[in-house]
Image (tube, rainbow, N blue to C red; front, top):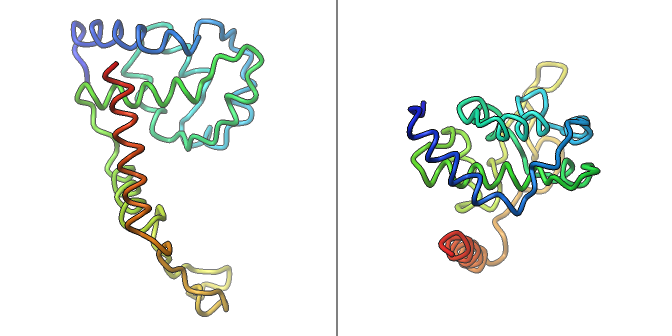
Amino acid sequence: MLKLNETDRLLEKLRESVATLTPSVCYSCARCSSGCVMVEAGCVPHSIIQLFRLGLLNEIERGLWSCCQCLKCDARCPQEARPAMLILALRNLLVAHGSAPPKGYMVMLENVVRYATIQQPQEVMNKDFDFVSRNTLGLPELGKPANMEAFRLNLKKIASNLLEVEEK
């Protein structure tokens, strides 16, 4: 949890860095949240914008990591407040200032780098309580991308480009 003086300094940096995202134009119509697939998981885009505007950073963190960045909220916003972009900016800035993302999120990112998927295929239980796999369902096995090294290289390029943009 952030201390008050740390929170004030971080909030000022956040406001400066996300000024171009125009969260101030949000009037809480909730259209962004009505289309969000992650509301039940705690991501409520219009609430995140309002909490940010009020400076309540500790409350914001609870919903940031459940956002799947599908961009539906940005597309639905009549004011172009860009909630998904604000969520992404807040994630990046909080991590840059020492807040760690949830462990499951980090595992998912490691899987993307290692296997190009967020999760390896696994057996699951069907409605008859039988375990099934891709093989038992007659589905082809998932393979790694044809050129995994090119995939990793592109990820590194994207990451370095993002770091360069943040430093400016």
